[in-house]
Amino acid sequence: MWLAQQQRRKSKDGGSQVGTVTLGGDPAGVCLDGERREVPVFAPGGYVWRPMRGDQVLVLKTGTEGEAPCVAGARCIRTDVVAEGEVLIFSGGCSIRLSTDGTVSVTGKLLVNGKEVMTRE
Image 1 (tube, rainbow, N blue to C red):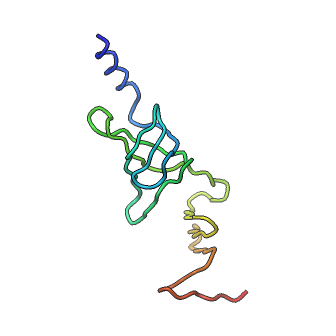
Image 2 (image 1 turned 180 degrees about the vertical axis):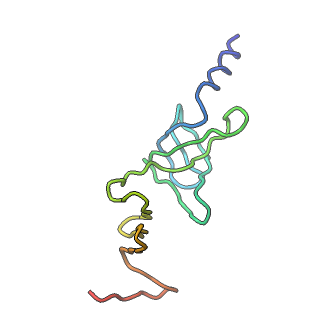
Image 3 (image 1 turned 120 degrees about the vertical axis):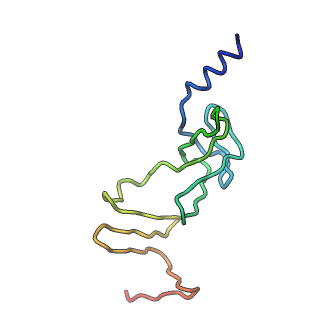
């Protein structure tokens, strides 16, 4: 009887949860209903991303019983600086912004083939 109730509870949790990263990197540690370790991280094709400790992330529960969670993405915390349709890639003090008008804006030191690109100020 008790085991049957536990199985029913698991299926009511749904297919995803928002959690907080406790161990950054890939695989990550994420606090959900308890801490999960060795959680693989997924990102769009051609893009490499590692969550940082403290990030809020979306965790998808995969496997037949939801026993294999994976991190699918992080909460967008800088939504006020991005217009509709724009893409902003940032880390620390550097960023690349792809605007809807076709403009590509780069902030920070820019290297092309290992050599710094100088700009006029």
